[in-house]
Amino acid sequence: MVRLIADRATVRVPATSANLGPGFDAFGLALGLYDDVEVRAIAGATSVHVEGEGAGEVPGGEDHLVVRAIRAGLEYVGAPQVGLELRCTNAVPHGRGLGSSAAAVVAGLVAARALVSEPGGLDDDSILGLATDFEGHPDNAAPALLGAATIAWIDEEGPRAASLPVASTLSATVLVPQTRLSTSRARATLPGHVPHRDAARNAGRAGLLTLALTQRPDLLLPATEDRLHQEYRASVMPETIRLVDRLRDHGHAAVVSGAGPSVLVLHEGKGSPQLYELAGSGWRRRALAIGRGVQLLTP
Image (cartoon, rainbow, N blue to C red; front, side, top):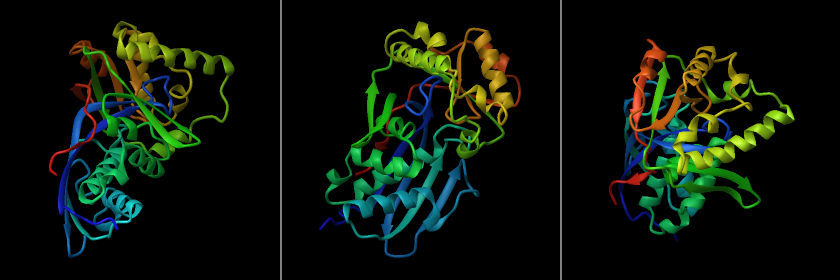
């Protein structure tokens, strides 16, 4: 029987950006912006304390997403359920297309792995599968788990992911609006069919994106061109699409971050100061390194 052998764990998990333009529901990137989650197994009732992003907004107790993920992980390996005390220090914005829900789920599952006597029962493949059950697709969970850039897919064996060794000069700027947008609302704008020429063009750009991320950052602008999903979302995030188009017109490799409404710009080094001028007021601007995958900070 799987037992609990630890009564605490601290996990750090990154923000992520999915799609990266043409890689719809497949490509993902970890960003150097992190949530820290401290978990204690206790005898009493579950409690959650949140600081930073989501404080006073997210559910507490058993309804909190990290708690639900821990419960799923413990159940998966047959470990006993216990009371939980969580302290979450969040830096990843919620409802902005930066993978906050995937971060919470992956953090909870990795915390569960740290608590049990047989952590191999929650290996990375199992965690990716469980996270996909929560998320519906693995494009954010994969980079949250593995770090850097990833390509995820689902086959008869379930969700899978592979890491890409990103170019050492690659970095990102995230432009975050005040407004939020749910993933379900953003996805509801997508058509059931797209023109064959657009699908074919996106397939080529997705292949080029692999090269740009790993060896040829100078190709990021053409490699991030999308005709499959971004423009269809304009009705629910017009300012985002206008900013993406404006930045690309000036030569910047800008895309909608995940389901939006944040904008991700990929570049070499620190990026151009012109990014801030083109964005204007109303957008929080964060220059970020490429992130590491989830980290267990305490045994």
